[in-house]
Image (cartoon, rainbow, N blue to C red):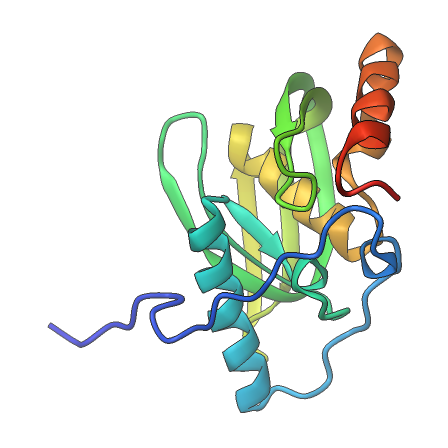
Length: 179
C-alpha cells in the first residue's frame, strides 16, 4: 500500500482572521505560483481548519488573499469529502433552496439559518495545477458555496434575511470581532 500523507500533518496552525479585518471583504487574487509555498499554504489551511474544528477554510481566513480553500466535510448522507481547490469558480449552484444552520470560523460562536442551494459544483485546479471538479450536495454543497463566497469577499451573514438578519447584525455588533 502506498504511503499517503495526512492533510495538515506537516502544516502550521495559523491565527484565524476575524470579522472586521479588511482581507475578509476583498476579492482574493488568482494563484499564479504553483510552487512549494502554495503546497505549504494548503497544508497550513488543513492544520488550521482541523485545530478550529471546521469543515472548510479559505486562505483569506488566515490572512492570505489568494483564491484557495480546503474542505473536510460530510454531505447529507454522511459521505466524507476531503480536498482543496485553487482558483475555484462556483460554476453551478442550483436545486432546492434550503435554510440551514451556518457558522464561520471568522465569526466564532455565531450561527444563523442561511439559505443555500442543495447542489453546487466548483471547478479549479489542485496545487500542481491539475484540473479539479468538485460536485456537492446537501451540507457539502453549503460548504462549497460558503468557501467560494469567502474568496469573493463575502460572508454567510450577508445572505441572512428577515428577522434572522436583524438578530445576526445585533450579534455581530456585540461581538469581539466587530467590523
